[in-house]
Amino acid sequence: CPKEAAESAEDMGNLCSPSPKSTRPKDQEDVCILFDFDGTIGNTETPAMEVAYWELAPYMPKAAAATMEKDKLPWMQSNAGKAFEFMLEDCEKERKAAGLDPIETIRKAKNEDTKALSVVNEARKRFNLPPVHEAKYDSLLTQQKEETVTALGVLSTPCDGIEQVFEELKAKKIPFCICTTSGKPRVPVCVKKLGFEKYFPPHKIHSGESDFVPSRFKPAPDVYLKGARTEDYEPTDCVAVEDSTSGVGSAANAKVGFIVGSEFPRCFNACTLCC
Image (cartoon, rainbow, N blue to C red; front, side):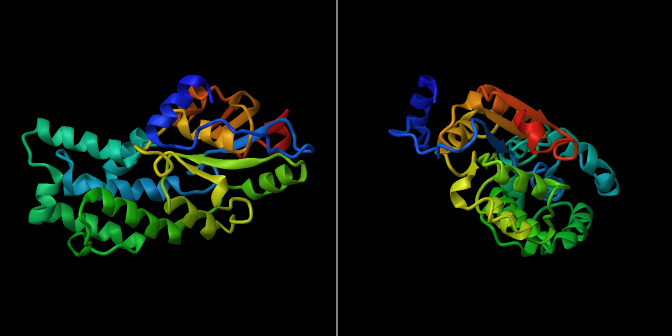
């Protein structure tokens, strides 16, 4: 890690400290691939964002039961790649500006709008989730974390062509790992559902949310720095594969040598990544 990153890492209690000795196999290639997860390896972005939307929908100041379904896609597009913590913070700011009570006050009193709640509960059925008032969690944040894991354990599917890329990388002895904002156990649950545990055992999954105290969400560089260090590569010798602006920002802030964005893996293969 760069000096300033290492000093920051010490303060946060993360694992971004210099390795005393190189452990990289001698026959391994001089490049390492650092994959984002949601929308890059797994088709998890859309269902995860849908869960996030329906968690917040009863508390959005401008939400109306009649337009909730129509408003969903624009909201998802504008919040893509953002941690739920930030979505929740934005919603609370909007409520405060509108003179409304905090979300947790409404949740504890079960005082959500009845018509809005009816629409939300119908949507929650698609994700095997119970009605809002039957969900027993201390906070909306905890509820979102747990319910996203539940939904993705059912709905996760692999991105087109991604397993072929993994096999090509293995054949070329090019190391790769996951560097994601998303937390654990969400990502490991999805990896298992996709059948990708053979590519990503626990030490190959790095999380900005779960591996740092406090959490370090993209576009902070920490999760990419950690992934590169764990694979025993300098960030400049790595390729990041991303599908969001915050993720590209994270890789750029970590000074990753090359960043592949958006339509991967449809347009790329292992040779493209390493040329």
